[in-house]
Image (tube, rainbow, N blue to C red):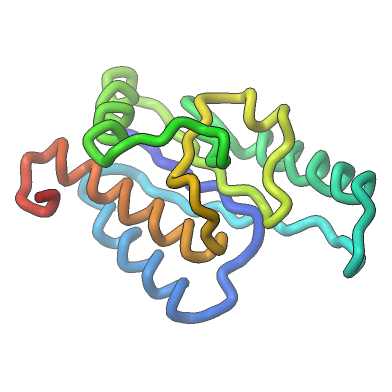
Length: 156
């Protein structure tokens, strides 16, 4: 069975975000081994310098790369936009060689180039979303992809 890792920098603070992710975790159990890995955000002052931001991203990036395995999909604005069937095809290809797929959501400052180069960059949209919402949206899209592959009526 395919292992799907969702590697996120930062925690979900509000219960409604945690509840939404938990619902998709439950729904995904028949399809994959789904795991959310929350990594701590690097501490920054309220007005960080570019050098401080760069150092924080490097620190976060090293931890991300320690946790990422298999096919890695860093989410970033310059990534490729996919529709839901396109994401389903990516997961279908990953299932041909059972292993691990790692989706990565960085901190509010983004991801280092090293993390972005670790795999195939994806973008959810040219719009910017709060990281909490992006996490829920990505969970829903992973669930939708498995529903597409299963031939259910969830995806219309």
